[in-house]
Image 1 (cartoon, rainbow, N blue to C red):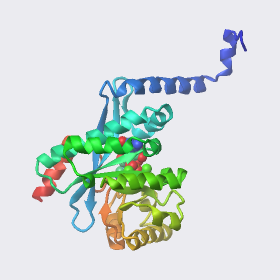
Image 2 (image 1 turned 135 degrees about the vertical axis):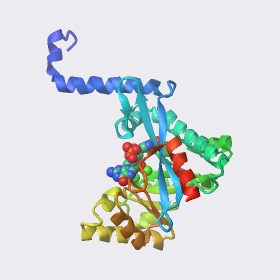
Image 3 (image 1 turned 180 degrees about the vertical axis):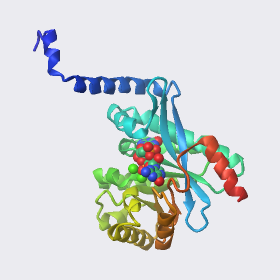
Image 4 (image 1 turned 30 degrees about the vertical axis):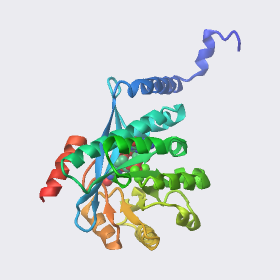
Length: 279
Ligand code: C2E
Ligand code: CA
Ligand code: CA
Ligand code: CA
C-alpha cells in the first residue's frame, strides 16, 4: 500500500469518485459559506386553524452558492453536522431569525413569533443556552418570542439528556416543539416527561389523511394525545383545502403547508404579514 502506484486509483469506480469529490467540494465550500454570507433564511407561516391568522414564522435555511446554485438544507445540514460546522451555522440561524423578528416587531406585528430548527448536535452543545439568550438580548425579544423545533428522533438519541437540555431552554422562557411528531417511536411515558409546548404532526401522516382511514386515525390520535397533555398541535405539510378542513375538525390548533404559503423570502413574508393585518 505504501508504494501505491497510479494504477491503484482505478479501484475507485468513476461514480464513487465523483460523489466523493462532490462531497469534499461541498464540505470545503461549506467552511467558507458563513463568512462569505451565502446563507439566508426563508420563512414559512404557521396559521391559526380557527381564523387563518399568521401566528408564527418558521425559519428555514438556504445556501446560495456562486457555482452550485441554491443548496437546500437536506443536502448540507447533515454534512454540517458531520464536520462540526453546524455549531456556527446554527448560532447564525438563531441570531438572524431573532433580528428578523425584531424588524417585524418594529413594523407593529406584535403577535407573531419565529421558530428555528435545532439539529441533534446543537441540542447537546453546552453553550446553546447562552447563544439563545444573547440572540434574544441583542434583538430586544422575550423568551416566548422564539420557538425551537427539535425532531422526535433527535430527542430519542439520548432521552434523559434531552429532557435536561429542554428544561434548561424552557428556563429561558422559549417555546419548544417536537418536530416530525409520530416518526420517532417515543413511548407515551417518555412524551409525558418532555417539557414542551407543542407537537408538530409529521407531514407523512397529513399527506394521505383524505385517502387513508388509517392516517386519519393516526392524526386523530396525535391530536387527542397533544390536547390531553395540554399541548398545542401543529399540522405540517398541509397542501389542500380538504386536508386543512379535516385537520381543523380534528382540533389542530395551527396549520402549516403549501396550501397557506410556501417558505418565503423575508420581504415576501413581510408582504404576507401586511396583508394578514389588513384582511
Ligand atoms: P422540517 O423542519 O420538517 O421543515 C419542513 C420542510 O417541509 C421544509 O423543507 C419545507 O419547505 C417543507 N414543506 C413545508 N410545507 C410543505 C408542504 O405543504 N408540502 C411539502 N411537500 N413540503 C413542505 P426544507 O426547507 O427543505 O427543510 C428541510 C429540513 O431541513 C427541515 O425539515 C429541517 O429539518 C431542516 N432545516 C431547515 N432549516 C434548518 C436550520 O436552520 N437548522 C437545522 N438544524 N435544520 C434545518
Ligand atoms: Ca421544522
Ligand atoms: Ca417537520
Ligand atoms: Ca422533516
